[in-house]
Image (cartoon, rainbow, N blue to C red):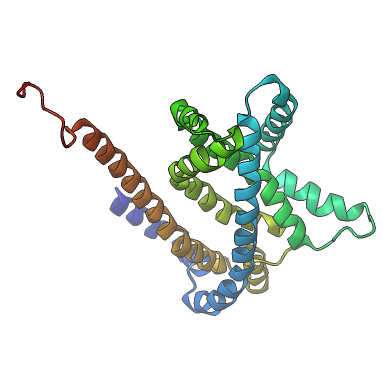
Length: 264
């Protein structure tokens, strides 16, 4: 199938023009160092946002998991936040913060597009990550919390020392999937004037009237994203093997126990 597709493409009437516009080897190697240099801005965006997202997303998940009517206002606020930012398009949020807040001209409020890019990405992805955290918290059996309470731990201590460690360990692979998406979505901030890898690519394309720099950008993201995807698969496989091994060990007779049909 791929061979047929390749044959159709290279034998098409527009192939020579396409090759000149998208596959210029000289321009590719000229653009690649400049694209890689600007990719550092995306890495900074990703790393700073990731730390903030992990903390804020966990706070939202804990608020949504609080039981009892006394915590209903907090659960309601967290739920509204998650619903709103999961529903809004990411590009719209970046536009409104990147252009809207500086336009207010409030004294002391930063106007640097990098700051508002971090804020926008944090607000957007915290909503998604909080749901991943909440799924992990709800996957911990209630008996774990009951055992913690029976040992004299308060509800908060049980959540901190018993429930959350188990929940976080279980959701590491899904979190990595979200952060792969975050790393790719950092290119959206180019729309508010931040010169990062995609904006640099647009500058190179406009200067040379050629689309080959986009190929260099695609290569950079492939080199970074594919290893993260394989790491996620490895973590998922390891977690599955750990759970299967735990179930098998639990089903085996323990030392001192008699097997079925053993001597009485």
